[in-house]
Image (cartoon, rainbow, N blue to C red):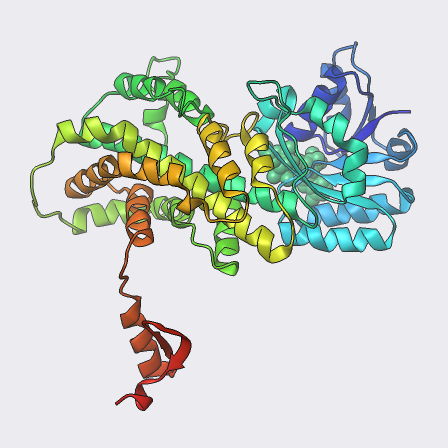
Length: 471
Ligand code: NDP
């Protein structure tokens, strides 16, 4: 009888199975095999080390029967209706106290719906966000479990065993909260990932177009910025990918079309931020930037139509000197956008998410792992999950020390015609946050004029006024 069953042998399912087996667990694996297809299960089994205890199945009932009492089935299939159909097939084969875990990128509202559906059938359900791609799945992913706490109690040691470990050896797998909290946090993780990737892309663009640096210099810069405070996975891969050459000794990056696609987790983060009224401008702009890159043919035409007037000289020395502090502050605010969204949505849903746990889970194994999280851990400790992180004095200190660098970067990029959607949204966001007077008074009066929506007045707590009562 095996410890855990994994349904779905895509890149994630295969690598998680190998990871569990490498830690001494016995595994059953299943994948559908359609007529005429090669047998995915036997292909996988051919690759498995003979020391590993992994059994492959092409029959669902034999797969389920091979599991120990209080069966644990981890499903790793495409998120959405496919997962619902897998659940429909497997539920009749399970009984009370058995556990289903969805390790895919599900929408957190779907997870809540499935939790309620399965609790009626006495099946425990966990929605576990997993990050780290194929390598993380194999060597130790970052894991964000939520849903049934009683099920978490039973699987926690197993999941912590296979998870990534931070630099002090702590597992990057912590209980997130009830309902779809685990998948919500994974969604926001991906939203932050979109923002940080776009910031890196914009800083690459500034160095390439504005400073005329070659790939080696840009790669060296990203390597040099791997400091104690900012070291991160995305800089590491960027630095390597910038100088990766094909067989003809050409940089691969230079031959790749400038059009990026997406699977929707960034969009889902932005939808959640609108649903919960929490601004995440850096993340929204990063999603927009991917959409704009998709207008490839329009951009080619518009390059001929729209001409840029000469405005003023660009200060290249100033740009070069501002790169590090500018990128640091923009990255810091990407995390703050995401963490504030989690903090507020947790309050609104009574999820009781401990932001300290989120930081622990993201410190290693995931795409947004970064040493900036050790600084954010102190910030989160100070604010005790109850106060806005933007109000924290340590954050204010960072803003005051680095804001002018970010601004200089953005101003010079705009003067040179280099698009910096996320970097500039970071500057505008900081300016808005500290603004004593935003122009929202004008929006209020316009809304009342055409829609009788009312407005509040300065120093008149909460009372609603209308223009027709005043003029
Ligand atoms: P895929 O998202 O490609 O899913 C592969 C599995 O889904 C296979 O078992 C496949 O079966 C099954 N599947 C696909 N279509 C159907 C269908 N119509 N009916 C039944 N089964 C179907 O694989 P990944 O391993 O990349 O991802 C698994 C989950 O993990 C996804 O939710 C993904 O979003 C998430 N994830 C992925 C990461 C990554 O880096 N790839 C990182 C983190 C999370 P078959 O082989 O027969 O087609």
